[in-house]
Image (cartoon, rainbow, N blue to C red; front, side):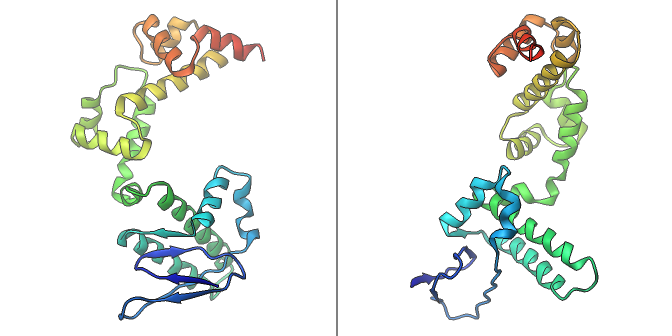
Amino acid sequence: MKLIVLKMEVFFFIPAFKEHTFIYPFTQDVKRTVLYISTEQLNWYFNKDFKDEINNLFINKHLQLSRKSFSNLSNIFEKIQFEKYSLDNMSESLTKAYFFELIIYLIRCQRYTHNINQRTNLSNITIGEIVNFIENNYGRQLTLPETAAQFGISESSLTKKIKIFTNMTFKEYLTKTRIEAAKSLLISSEKSITEIAYECGYNNSNFFGDVFKKAVGMSPSSYRKMLTKQ
């Protein structure tokens, strides 16, 4: 039998049929919510990118959450509990959707231990608009000051937002976007390397070649030859 000493804001994973006992080392009222998860309910993850992280959740056995993260998790639990009464023919589908939301949120808590609240804060919705702006304007001489001004925020704030959500600087994300666009053009078009360089925001094809090789590991012409031969 496993002895578990509970702390506040902790999420535990207990394997099926595992005998266990909880001890609460505090005097105030405690609310314990239990959710039973079958292997079948997790099967949809097993052939996806989440497989290892799902396994890690159950290997690590518990997550220590911040008060904010625990509150967010509790809200998801409440939505699941609300729909279990089968209010209408959509309740079953909503219950499954909330369950998937729960698992994904737990994976995020595990993945982004130190900044989960920043990443899931709805006030950060601007990041989607920033990303779209970069992806729609990478073909010109886009700068950090211009992009920050476009959204009425400081350069440091813009840099922080991009770093939190992409783990890249503004320049790194812009370069990644340009290189991905260049790779697509090299495969799908017959444009010259120089034309592609200009279309992707580079005024100098030699500089474009250097940046591309650093990112991809080969020159643009070599990349094109390799992919078009397949």
